[in-house]
Length: 542
Image 1: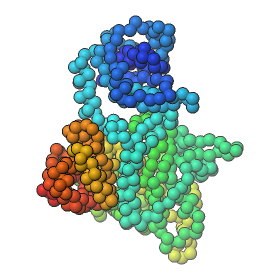
Image 2: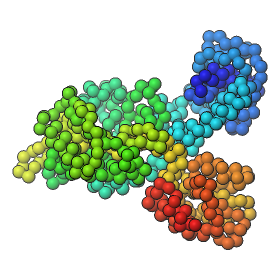
Image 3: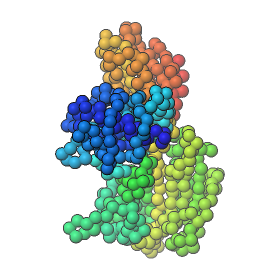
């Protein structure tokens, strides 16, 4: 679509001038990745329908000078490149949002496209529909999951209620996994004195990605990692060999100052949440701990449909620039190799690609678009125990140094969500879907019955809403499908009289004459089992 951007810019200018002639105050025209935008200075917003009224072609004799459009004494900032000589006559407005460039000003941002030929617009809308199936940024906007407002810092995401529901479900599942392995969940602060990062080595080796600042003549840093804080918890009391392995977990929010040009939706942000975990243990406990972590990681990945040939395991060994003794590296590497061999797993050895502080295992997954993503990681660390002088009291009363294993199964939860949205093309499994059931009353006559059905579903913990708008049933059904709702429950006069429901599932599958309790029982089992498909539920209803 790059070849159309100069046409979109021309279309944006025409649209802005239409707004200006209607008495509105456009202040800037520019280009996004797949559209133009026009910012209007206004204390009130516009609806999408209102914004579309100005999307029409009109011939304007304007000039562009010094980055501004000049027309009848008006000046509107314009940025984004050259302006096409062709006349875009076919418009589509895609979105309306609001942002605040200063505390006093409010801008309404209208995004849209314009083309010279109607066929080009149709092709674009068809392309956009396909993109909306696999680009998590488009899916996120379409399903109202998250946003990146201009007022927030670049790379900082805001999760809306629907997006937070997905995050909470991911967290609940990981809490179950952590509990099954004996982790104790902790919570740690976001800001620490710079001395902590100097001890850990981040201050010297990771400083370009850290957010450092001074307050009251003291330097502080926002955490890029959770491990130093977990170490402080370990050091808060004397530890015995009987305490080990000691496992801490945290859904820790960390901040890394990625370059602006590298930011990309949820896949590359500056603030994100890790399903972080740190295990403090003895050398002789390494192999068994690694085996448990590998098995649990594969279990988690399989829950989301990543298994067998869609999972690739990598073992990264000692790099030339490393710390620790030969004995430590040999023990750690042998533990990783033995764990993988005893589990009968295939893996690829990546020579000299381990971290400078220890060897590691990484897991790559292949999504439905045949792309490979590096997700889970298990890392053995000699560096931080040495830097922080960690100790435990052994059986004989001597003090020894523990080893730390860093692990993250999702990795970045934000990145993991983006991958899932694209993998499932926005049609998430029922257990992950923000709205699991939508109830559609056919007429107002059955609104009360629809409310009763909704109440009974919600009472059992199902995430359900009602769409009883004035639009036709077919339009409401299409909207539910477009929003990725797993199940649509339709109720009409016949269903109300018989105390039944009609259920529509994905794939345009419809089953009539279902008792609500039968549907509820099958649905709850599907959610409890975290099924990826609706097959079991449908087979029970037929």
